[in-house]
Image (cartoon, rainbow, N blue to C red; front, side, top):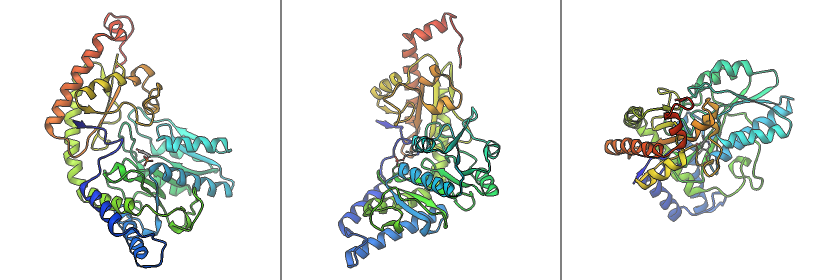
Length: 394
Ligand SMILES: *Cc1c(COP(=O)(O)O)cnc(C)c1O
């Protein structure tokens, strides 16, 4: 079996599992309790906060633990909106190809009276800093642009966008869920005010993540209750999950350079191999992309059928994103970069992890070629195109 869906989730690392089990066994206390087992749990929690903060260049006090990336996105955006509304600033800028955790939160805010600008994304999958600057008005309270896209893997010019936001006194949030643990991030150098991350995208456990918010930014509680997390997020902390997340992020950080070199070499080989298939196109910029991301559109086929046949061949991949699979709408990300509906339906994302071997890569190239050819052999759309009825798009 070849697991090539690391953008959907990653397998927990051995070290993260060890930390989790050890914490469950040895540090089961409630961090809010004053007796010894409680205080031990508190120490584990604060050490994890320091570890996470160190990896992104933050102060531990700027880290709030959450249930994952979605919650961090919601809290960041809701907080900036509340701060903006107090000053009468109710305009938010984002992009059309954000994760639904961002887009759906913005849609709610639109219903609540905010003005939302969703920037178009260039066909290479990159938002330009100039676009952001042009969209900023006196009423803008927040710019939220992801660090790297979850479907097509393109990396955004976060530092430049952050610089523009600083210049105009606008808060800048970035959904860095796909980026943390995969590419270097430094919240200070990158001019980031708020950042969301999720452990299960960097070999940590599911259901745990964090929100970085620069000192001085007042967060809005999404969950009311006790005074945990400095009063910003009620509920007894997920101590084993948080400790395991800290182990995973330290591990990912220490291996980052070697991982990027190795995995991007395999990615590039996979891209070269798949490009030999007629009438296909790589989605997103070839250079500015995450080390493990490969995303193609193939004309004349359905992504869903492609996935099922690849699954039969032992390859686990994705078409669109996990969150939208099961619905018949093509991916909003592919539409945002200008792919037409028919072409967007025939997409395939292979997201590689460190465990992928060179042989796996060759096997995947062969399998995708075979399956695409097979599906085209009885596709009416493909037959028409080959008969000269209609024009090839790719
Ligand atoms: C996975 C993902 C999320 C959601 O994170 P969860 O921890 O699953 O809630 C948000 N944004 C991006 C870009 C993602 O890839």
